[in-house]
Amino acid sequence: MPRKAKLSVAVISVPITKRENSRFEHFQKGLLDEQRKAIVSHINGNKQRFGADVEVKDCGDLIDAGLTRPGSSKFIDEATVAKLGKKIEALRKKHDLVIMIGERHTGAAFAYTGHGEVAHFDAHTDRGGYPLPAGAFPGISRPDVNASNYVGRSIAAGFKKEDQIRHYELPSDLAWKEDAEIFDIDLDVFKRHYNMEKMYSMGMLNIPDVGKPVADSKRINLLNISEYRKEWDDNGTAMRLMKGFALAAIGAVERRKRGK
Image (cartoon, rainbow, N blue to C red; front, side):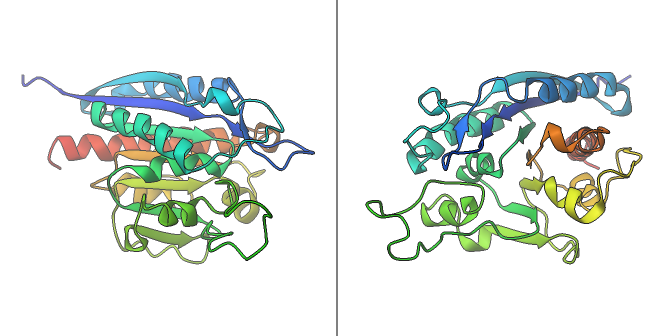
């Protein structure tokens, strides 16, 4: 009997958050430990689904220690994005698939620094503040990288070109046209448009709308899922979505490795 192919998966959390009375986002170590560990456990519990030996590694938090204090006067700037992006890119070179989860969509910027095209699923393009209106932030040339502008700032900083990012708006623009190496998915879109209070059966392919492109991808090697809020997820639907996306992405990579 031929030996099974091996498939290596890294799961990492990007614990950027923003609380009341602060205009700044910051890193909060341990913010998504529970959810990251749950995804790792779910993958381990479903290895029998795959025709390859799946090895999953919990890679902990991606964090910048200098930006951990709420209300810090420092910005998450392009230098920070580039520095942490190199860590994500190193994981991509080491593993067949990297899965990132985050509370704020700002964390997706670290995925945009590396190689490959992006499939961006969101209700908007996240290009706010680009270009920056004159006088919007007195004394500085541009605002921090944040959840409303990370796509635009990635382009402005030269991490990605315009034609390397394909934007799919939910729920109105779901015609899947092109594949990509990087899938960037905004969870709160499902809350707004699909009423996440309703229960879904989260099998590998039974995920609203975006699940099929993830599962059918022939190129995916980085899956980013952002805007997870525990306080929005009383019945665990968003957690099931993240687990479903993870298994769908692993299935896609496994078929690619087996040449199917």
